[in-house]
Length: 117
Image (cartoon, rainbow, N blue to C red; front, side, top):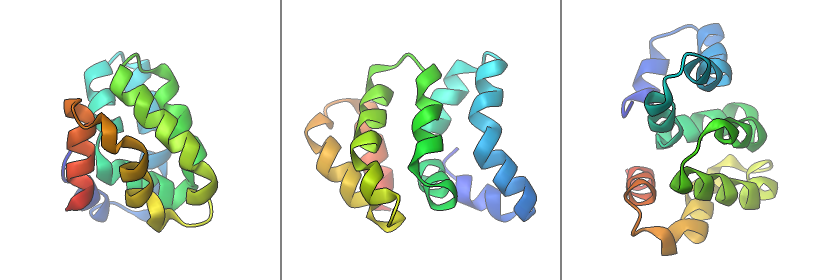
Protein backbone atom coordinates (compact mmCIF):
# COMPACT_ATOMS: atom_id res chain seq x y z
CA UNK A 1 0.00 0.00 0.00
CA UNK A 2 2.99 2.29 0.14
CA UNK A 3 2.57 3.26 -3.52
CA UNK A 4 -1.05 4.29 -3.08
CA UNK A 5 -0.66 7.60 -4.92
CA UNK A 6 1.17 5.86 -7.76
CA UNK A 7 -1.65 3.33 -8.08
CA UNK A 8 -4.21 6.14 -8.19
CA UNK A 9 -2.31 7.83 -11.02
CA UNK A 10 -2.96 4.82 -13.23
CA UNK A 11 -6.76 4.84 -12.99
CA UNK A 12 -9.46 7.13 -14.32
CA UNK A 13 -10.78 10.02 -12.23
CA UNK A 14 -14.04 8.12 -11.71
CA UNK A 15 -12.16 5.06 -10.43
CA UNK A 16 -10.08 7.25 -8.09
CA UNK A 17 -13.16 8.76 -6.53
CA UNK A 18 -14.85 5.37 -6.21
CA UNK A 19 -11.75 3.73 -4.69
CA UNK A 20 -11.11 6.48 -2.18
CA UNK A 21 -14.75 6.59 -1.15
CA UNK A 22 -15.58 2.88 -0.95
CA UNK A 23 -12.43 0.75 -0.59
CA UNK A 24 -12.52 0.72 3.24
CA UNK A 25 -16.17 -0.37 3.17
CA UNK A 26 -15.47 -3.19 0.71
CA UNK A 27 -12.45 -4.45 2.64
CA UNK A 28 -14.50 -4.49 5.84
CA UNK A 29 -17.47 -6.21 4.19
CA UNK A 30 -15.14 -8.88 2.78
CA UNK A 31 -13.65 -9.52 6.22
CA UNK A 32 -10.22 -8.35 5.08
CA UNK A 33 -9.41 -6.70 8.40
CA UNK A 34 -5.63 -6.70 8.08
CA UNK A 35 -5.77 -5.08 4.64
CA UNK A 36 -8.23 -2.52 6.00
CA UNK A 37 -5.88 -1.71 8.89
CA UNK A 38 -3.00 -1.40 6.45
CA UNK A 39 -5.01 0.92 4.20
CA UNK A 40 -6.16 3.12 7.10
CA UNK A 41 -2.56 3.45 8.28
CA UNK A 42 -1.21 4.40 4.85
CA UNK A 43 -0.39 8.10 4.87
CA UNK A 44 -0.92 8.41 1.11
CA UNK A 45 -4.47 7.08 1.45
CA UNK A 46 -5.21 9.34 4.43
CA UNK A 47 -3.91 12.37 2.57
CA UNK A 48 -5.66 11.56 -0.71
CA UNK A 49 -9.02 10.95 0.96
CA UNK A 50 -8.86 14.17 2.97
CA UNK A 51 -7.80 16.17 -0.08
CA UNK A 52 -10.71 14.78 -2.09
CA UNK A 53 -13.53 14.60 0.47
CA UNK A 54 -12.43 16.41 3.62
CA UNK A 55 -11.84 14.58 6.91
CA UNK A 56 -15.29 13.27 7.87
CA UNK A 57 -15.54 10.31 5.47
CA UNK A 58 -12.09 9.18 6.56
CA UNK A 59 -12.98 9.56 10.24
CA UNK A 60 -16.00 7.33 9.62
CA UNK A 61 -13.79 4.64 8.03
CA UNK A 62 -12.09 4.02 11.38
CA UNK A 63 -15.36 3.10 13.11
CA UNK A 64 -15.23 -0.54 12.00
CA UNK A 65 -11.65 -1.23 13.09
CA UNK A 66 -10.76 -2.53 16.54
CA UNK A 67 -7.22 -1.25 16.89
CA UNK A 68 -6.00 1.10 19.61
CA UNK A 69 -3.43 2.91 17.45
CA UNK A 70 -5.94 3.45 14.64
CA UNK A 71 -8.45 4.77 17.19
CA UNK A 72 -5.80 7.25 18.34
CA UNK A 73 -5.32 8.28 14.73
CA UNK A 74 -9.08 8.68 14.38
CA UNK A 75 -9.16 10.86 17.51
CA UNK A 76 -6.35 13.00 16.09
CA UNK A 77 -8.33 13.44 12.88
CA UNK A 78 -11.47 14.32 14.82
CA UNK A 79 -9.53 16.95 16.75
CA UNK A 80 -8.07 18.29 13.50
CA UNK A 81 -11.24 18.16 11.41
CA UNK A 82 -12.06 21.85 11.78
CA UNK A 83 -8.62 22.76 10.41
CA UNK A 84 -8.44 20.08 7.70
CA UNK A 85 -11.89 20.96 6.40
CA UNK A 86 -10.50 24.33 5.33
CA UNK A 87 -6.88 23.41 4.55
CA UNK A 88 -5.88 19.82 3.86
CA UNK A 89 -2.22 20.87 3.58
CA UNK A 90 -2.21 21.13 7.39
CA UNK A 91 -2.53 17.33 7.70
CA UNK A 92 1.13 16.63 8.48
CA UNK A 93 1.38 19.37 11.09
CA UNK A 94 -1.89 18.33 12.70
CA UNK A 95 -0.87 14.66 12.91
CA UNK A 96 2.53 15.51 14.34
CA UNK A 97 1.05 17.86 16.89
CA UNK A 98 -1.56 15.37 18.03
CA UNK A 99 0.36 12.08 17.75
CA UNK A 100 3.99 12.96 18.45
CA UNK A 101 3.86 11.69 22.05
CA UNK A 102 2.44 8.34 20.84
CA UNK A 103 5.40 7.45 18.63
CA UNK A 104 6.31 4.49 20.81
CA UNK A 105 3.46 2.67 19.04
CA UNK A 106 4.87 1.23 15.81
CA UNK A 107 1.81 2.10 13.73
CA UNK A 108 1.84 5.76 14.80
CA UNK A 109 5.59 5.93 14.22
CA UNK A 110 5.12 4.48 10.72
CA UNK A 111 2.39 7.00 9.81
CA UNK A 112 4.45 9.95 11.01
CA UNK A 113 7.54 8.61 9.24
CA UNK A 114 5.59 8.17 5.99
CA UNK A 115 4.26 11.72 6.34
CA UNK A 116 7.84 13.01 6.36
CA UNK A 117 8.58 11.59 2.92
